[in-house]
Image (cartoon, rainbow, N blue to C red; front, side, top):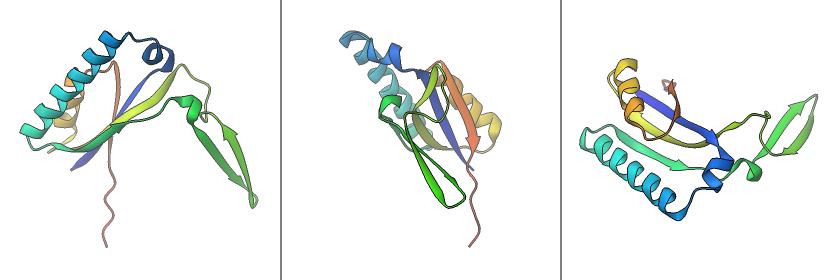
Length: 114
């Protein structure tokens, strides 16, 4: 089964990281990807640009409202994701626990039948 691991954090903390901290984080993610790959669980993933570069669209009554910035005003924003393969939710949660980030949401991917 496929699972999305959504990584949340505070943009300010990511932006204020020293080059050494950024390198440590990058290296931790490389190790994490290597572990997932070794277990055949890594399907993909990427970091996302900061929330200031977000554009949100709302559609209502045939009109489209564009808002620059995230949909909600929160401290934690979606900063990246991994797409993984796991036998079940418990295995996916086990992988999420090994992720080097503090906030990781695990969500099953809906696979539609054709």
